[in-house]
Every structure is written in structure tokens, then in C-alpha cells.
Image (spheres, rainbow, N blue to C red):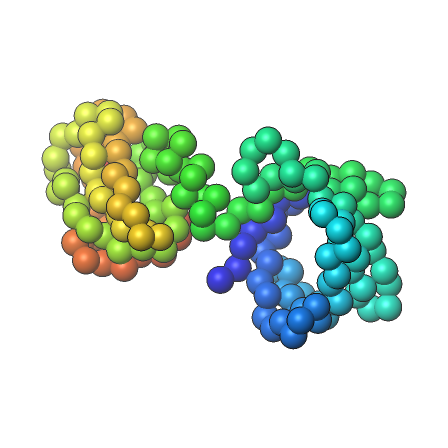
Length: 169
């Protein structure tokens, strides 16, 4: 499963295709790279790609999965956005994803229970759906008072990351 790496304003999709010890075939967005990756000491990495050597030091920041990367000439702030990070971010935001008029799945999972139906009047903070992901059940709540416009899932459905589950008017 790919992860996303946010580097400044850029978000890159990164997927490891193959690994044999320190030799790694990785896809970044739609381009494949063959790299030799060595972890030298705490937080320092040596990367050889196309006969070019790069040394990078990663220093963790106070927020989980965020780092400052130091290269010879530049410094970058980066964030690893994997399924766990999306889940934590959405839980920390009151389990409300993307927009106030939609409840979306922060990661792949299975619908345990849909608690609303089309046409229902709902109040801010009301639980609308329960999703099981990463061996945990989470309640997803309505962000605004309104009427349920669409319920796009049923109990037992398998959902993908960012799939719209419920829409509110």
C-alpha cells in the first residue's frame, strides 16, 4: 500500500515495489527508482541512485511522523502520511473528515453500523456511522446540523480510503 510524503507543498505517493536487503525498488508518483539505502547511524541515511550519492539526516519533530530532513545544501520539513497518520489526524479532528457536509473514510475498513438513513434530521456531534479499521472501531460524527442527503454504504460494506460514506445537506 502506498504512503504519501508531504515535502513542503508537494505530496508524493511512495510505494516500495521490491526489497532485497538494502537494495530497494521504489515508485514515487509514477516513476520507478532503484536505490541502495544504508542506515548509517541514528537518523542518518546514505542513498545511492543512478550512481549519485545522497546523505540525509532525519530529525523527528514533536508531532508524530514529521521530520526535518537535512541534506548537504538544503533543509526540508516532511510528513509521512500513511493509513495510521490519516486515522490519527481524523480522530484528533473529532473524527470528521474533509468537509462539513461529508463523512469520509480516513482509511480502508469495514462498515460496522450505519446509524442514519436518507432524510433523517441530524444534529452536530451525532454519530452517523461506525467503521472498523486497523482492529479498532471508530464512530464518525456529523459536523453540522442538517438532513441526511445520501447514505452511500450499508452495514458490512468494505470501504476504501477517502470514500464518501454519508452526505449532509
